[in-house]
Figure 1 (cartoon, rainbow, N blue to C red):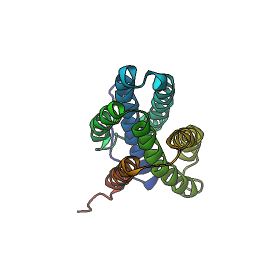
Figure 2 (figure 1 turned 180 degrees about the vertical axis):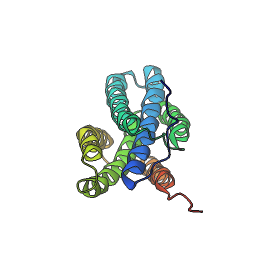
Figure 3 (figure 1 turned 45 degrees about the horizontal axis):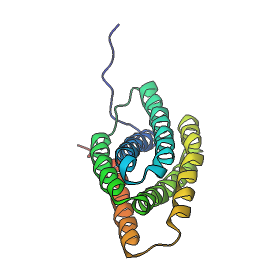
Length: 183
């Protein structure tokens, strides 16, 4: 039995899930790196970071299964998200609780908006992709809300982190969703 080489995404639905899969890889990397740093910087945050890490691994697996079922290769940005997430997680983990909360809040703000837009589209185009997104949205909302509570107001430092991380997250999504060149 030969295994077919995964193919590029052919539809908007498939591109959406590829980008989601790459984003979840980035989220796994962020929380993994943060978990290394909070052990000595803010040990009281370790259980929450590990819980979020577990959720993000599950989300990545949901999207990986969707792509595998359709024999669609992962997004070009998959490893970029992993490396970027690791760097972001290390830096914010070293900076402590407010930086971790600001990062989570910023990422999840963008992700939730992105997922809501996807749901509106997928509902009429791909029920399985729609269901996959529905499986993760409550966890993402919970991460967002917990981070917002932990911020309890922002200062110059956390506002800067939020702006930079939001912009970076938006750029990664746009890069992943770009349309392939037609020859």
